[in-house]
Image 1 (cartoon, rainbow, N blue to C red):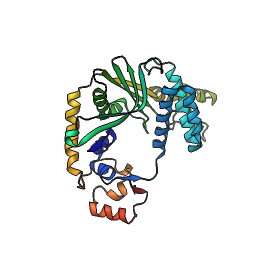
Image 2: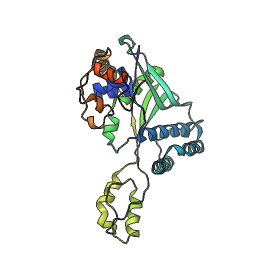
Image 3: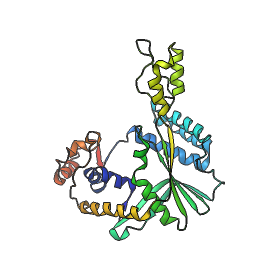
Image 4: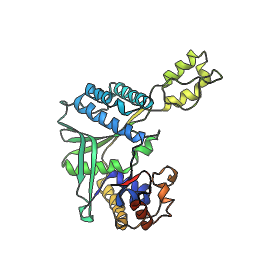
Length: 310
């Protein structure tokens, strides 16, 4: 029985060959990039925030600050500060412990719907809140780059979590909320050699940018284009999704499982990604020019730098 997660399915849909490297040959990069590290840290921060309280979560960030360089620590502290401020003003938020029937962080979920196909659906929900006969699954997102709400919400993760939640909490109405936190934090813009405020894209707030322009003796109206762009950025977006079609989800997942099944016995699938230059496996894949014997030879000789077999 193979375990199927949202991450694996998303990898398969983006590029069959990348999925083959990661989940069939079980190859992975030895080092974690900074965006993954920030995402992991923020996930842990929110798990503690919603189950143990704000101070415990802040203490956690402080205790792990040594793992970050100065610039990254400033980014994380900015995200944390903005998040706490946002949480104090919004009405769409998880209830505190004691104000709901049950609340779980990092909750293991699964569904046996596809067991007959040899795949068990599994996942780990960031937060699960149960109030009476309603269950809300909260999924935190920390995109590496600013992405549109449509991009972030039109993915299979919401469907899969809703399906697993329906299987595990029988008789309950299951909702999913995407909690999207962009990597944006207050930062004063630089002054150029021409003694002008820089127009280069930076992560800051319109208020801070406007004040920097005024402090530099300039007119904010001359920077209206930059201020408009900054005003349109939403650092935090919460997107609730209700009443998903369970049958459509099952049909869609079954189609992907049937295609995956063709490649589980070391058959190298086609390349299907248009982001090869950003892929961690591009040096060996060479846009699909590799083959199974050559990859295994690289592995056995340990000549693939930065890659190890799990």
